Length: 397
Image (cartoon, rainbow, N blue to C red; front, side):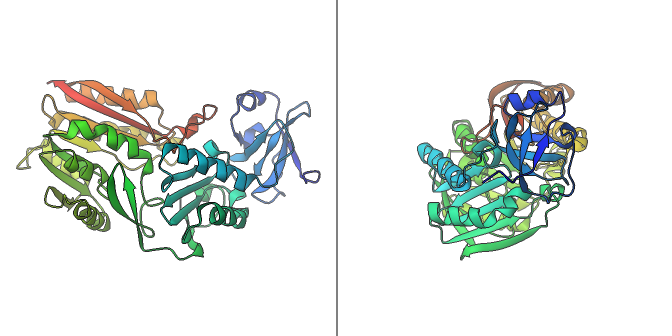
């Protein structure tokens, strides 16, 4: 099967990351980047001495020139797409969440550049690599067979596709997609829009963090910034919060969050409003709000498109977290998260420590958490760990 594939060779000195199991090969690690090979072509990779280093998708247009599928062999199983999707789905079954979850998390599930989210009978797929784009028919067939969905939507609109030379589009590839799908998470129900939404529709990666916060909400005045579809706010209301406000800059998100609150019978306990998070924090700092929260949730969107945006993103997190810490009373809580693999856990904690110091407050770390288990972290690839979540308690100042 692979006797005719083209082989690329690593430069001397580029072997170490391969030996540690990293799945990406950058263009400057290759002896030659053959621009005549079409993006997404499956190619072999050789060590400098000629031994097989693996097989993967090659893209001469991308900084990530190869995404490896197997290591130390030039033999790729014929049905690897279906086999790996089946293994990924089986793992989610062991977690007890396979009806509503991330079924496939790219590299961590052995399928670089492929994201699959399941919403009951509806499936949303996101392709981030040229190699997976070429295998779209095989992916659709495998998902149809494994999940038996009513519809499969390809939501291929992520900005990362530009780095692979891929176009942006949405397409229903199988069956009929509903306008919205109902999911159950931590015993609560939510409507999730299937089109015209953020990312693939729902942030499954925060599932366990929402559950972990439930005991801390009781009796609190909670402000959920970037509420999106209201999951943290509704969890707070259901967990005995005294009052809850949910804020988002999207009118559609606020409408859906309101609907979800009604669905969970807490519509009378939450006030949702369209507003920018930073503007609201500034108003709180200036003492312009009639009532102040003692629990703030801060989950800003990812603005780190690449490493050059990292300083700007860290400044934004520091500014927003610092203001939140400043306005919270002694004994108050701040739950804050970041969602970029460019921000390491160390950077995250250093940023929060600096924000607290600048605010003139002392805070303790109650919990430090990450992404949910259906977003597994591959030990050999630090890039697969992207979500950092901290619960802080203000103890002085």
